Image (cartoon, rainbow, N blue to C red; front, top):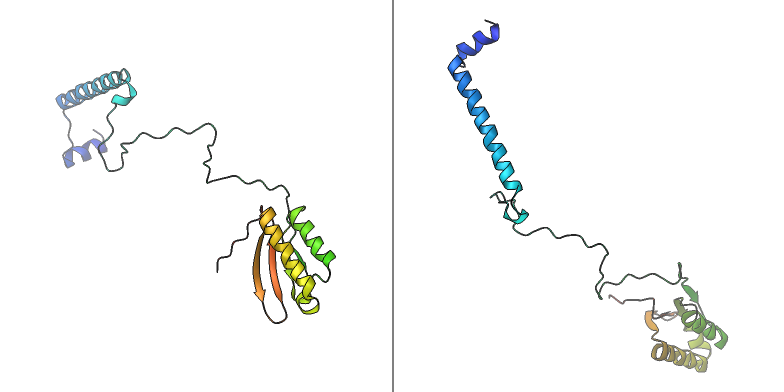
Length: 170
């Protein structure tokens, strides 16, 4: 006998010839029962498999992924027409400067920040004409115009095309 056999016998792990034979037979029986169970479950449809009864099992089947993404109307993928928007800051002094602003907003789709304080102080007629042009752009083209700041020396307005959304959160 080896040292390990003596140690096992002293700790109560002594196996007799009969116990060894019974263990081999029960192991073979367990193996054949397991093989039978596996072959029986393979012939069943997939829905008849029992799921393990634990807290992590899911009762709902997993959704199958769609081959192509489906977008709802409220989630829209926006691809800009231009890769870069230039935001122009201008202090118009003449009607030509106002016409330049109109061209930038309507034709070039660029937002413009206007400082109308010079026109307000120097020429009331040109200031009124600038306000009328902004109103026309808003009504005809859907342009957005938001007052950014009004102080004694500045009247800042941002004018943006319909495609560039400016949101006032304050």
